[in-house]
Image (cartoon, rainbow, N blue to C red; front, side, top):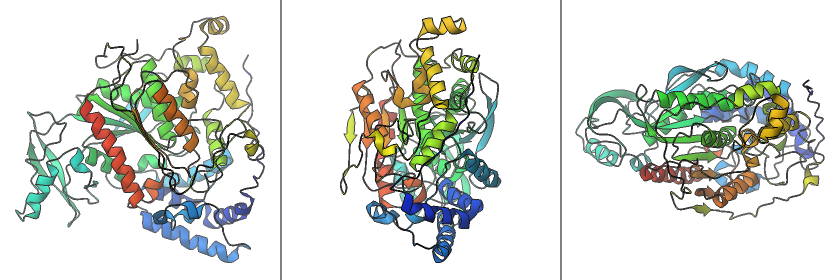
Length: 554
């Protein structure tokens, strides 16, 4: 018999946020769900709501709320934020503490769930377990001379992946009157083919085509897991961002529309994305993918999901992965609860709060009947679409580097569970039930006694849910982790980075002191964002040219 528990959290106001509570409530009531949708559309980079327009809309609404609110808003950590982000930060205060808030928001925001520019190729992929049809957005690389709405690119970083772009740009600048890319061949291209490619023109905003010789029809793959706390979907539709990423990297970017928790909680998002990965690699010739060059990439909850994918992939099909790119990843289900060993008094004022995090993990870990878990996790062993490597060497494939920048302010993290005692209750009962079931999988005898079949003892089931719980981090692909000290995920990301390195996994870890969650999305032109992209693209270029994926662990 399975006992289902009903979530009954009762949040108490934390002493450090009492002063901001009235401001947030007033802002939420004034802005309303539609304006908050504008705020998150801002994060998604929606073509219908520009960064500036969304920020302006919220700023005006905030100004109105100031006039009618007894106390003016005050921000405890605004002075710690990088100057280039301080103007927009006050417009990015939002918090979700109840599932109904999330549902209400999604009902309104669903009208924005569409691609309005840089429309990708859309395919459907079956979940290999329950047959659910997963939509996958595929962004194929264009060769862009300049950044434009129709051909977005980070021009300063594109030559890392296609050095001949500099020469092509020079030819056009010299006044030859054409946007010819006959010499612009990506560094990772396979010669011998000719293809027609899109060329953007910033001056006219138009896209033309040009015939390029020796350009590969096969590109590396980035499987990108979108963020949103497993609660929201709007970042799936951030098509200008994904196309820009594809054009800069000269890689195919695939974004699965995995199920959010209101549709189906863990392990559905994990298995949706892994099914998409397996499908694309099994059909790599159909989609112009080089299956030997694959990155797992994600931001926020998507960063945590990418870490889970790396663990799950290691224990199952073990497709060769060049790197896992974890951008301010959501890794530890305990953060924000009494179970957490971390508390950073300077984190979480903007974008993503501790309370929102507790709700997100609680919804993601809703109790799933044990028999359903058996069905969804245990038998899922797809046949690899490409050959595996036989080596069992520890994967010291690139130099392990840790870059920690904490200039400006010291970390305020404190391993004191009492600090959260009034902020939230523990995740029990629902999350503890699912973790208990997952622990059972790692005891084959106990599992057989209860369910009549053996489980796989070398499969780290708890880690698939929350990567911070991983008992074995060996044989994982090299990782890039970028997190700021003002982000509530700072401590868990740093701990995960250290654990990876201790397991022999190379890690490029950076922790600046003055950025908040999703900084790169809300301030894409800030100098701090440029620094971040420089680190990110350097890592990916280094991994690309190493041409060595994770070795086979078994």
